[in-house]
Image (cartoon, rainbow, N blue to C red; front, side, top):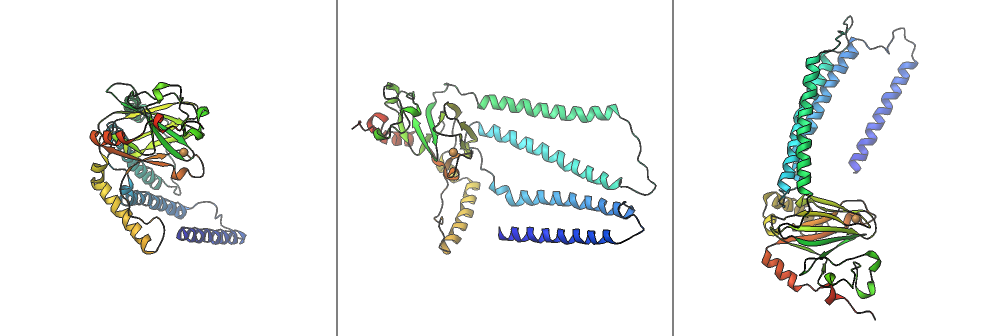
Length: 352
Ligand SMILES: [Cu+2]
């Protein structure tokens, strides 16, 4: 950060000196019209265009080499693969077109720079050329948009097929709570007005609704691998967004309404920890943490990979730390964990 600031200051000082010399030049009486570009000026600008082209190509290659490793590992949900494919195809097309058009743009900028005695050709139009450069983007974009719409409708189709488990994600400043629908797989009605801290009814579950009695409220989300999950999102206070990056899932949590998202986890936490990209990331992170530990700084404990639910809407001061751990495990492990949890009815303290 300090280096960046120093660099910025140096650049600004350089610009200031350059501007001052210009003012000085302008104040000198000259007979020659220096404000009109001559052949030399145009040539310099032409070369600068080339330099800029090299700069943008260079920074692209540099970013690929240096930052590819911060991308997410393979998707851990059923729909995630298709989602990633759509993103990578869009990236590839944009990359291909931009690489070629930038080269042409800058080359022609140089080739047809202003020259003494050279006159621009008046060229009215060319129907065939215009047709070609209109129809190609039309076909490519229509293809991408149709594919995107198709993917979107498949991903967003939240239904009760394939025996999904129903889980509520409850957002509040600044934490998450999950509620399983219990044995009946139906969530009890809930409303923020029914929140009763004295009775430990933190989610405002309607005590008169029998569906709510077997609901299970937890602070760590466990999901059985291969089983579809239908999420119902609620928010207590402001807009939040339930973001589960490894599952390529995100849905806003809006006060006063229930939003939904559904996905099937396909990779357990244990399996994901063995993924080469994840192993690499853990290694890199722990190297940094070891350095911090040596300097006696906080946040230096060794880190182990876990899936995570994050808030992806800036919802206030501690938004950055609004997260919940997600554990994807086998059906048996999940059932064993679930059997240890208390239901809403068991947990509720009778009013004093
Ligand atoms: Cu939030």
